[in-house]
Image (cartoon, rainbow, N blue to C red; front, side, top):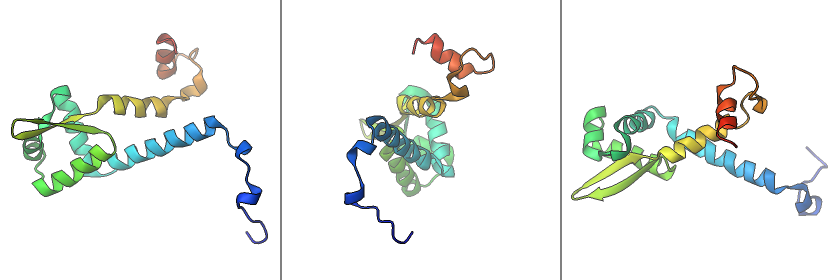
Length: 136
């Protein structure tokens, strides 16, 4: 748009609330997590790690179960780890990967935060009822 300039002279910090900043940060974080899962192999890896539970699985086991080559698997596990969706730990000579259940719960909570406009009275809105039962 010609003539209208958006720059430091036209910008005031008073126009931004802390709530807006936090919501933007939450949204950017959610976009990063969803972006990591928006690839078939990574989604399959993450779902496999969810199935095996908190004990996790070695990279070799994940690769064998999902028929992924080690280089491909390593690339995808690094992307999932960067998004905070998996953690890794060394056990003897193996690296064990585990789904980060808390991170996934945080994502789901963010996505469902305003479900049914927060109307827990509605019998159809199970997430809002669960939130109310939890005392939030």
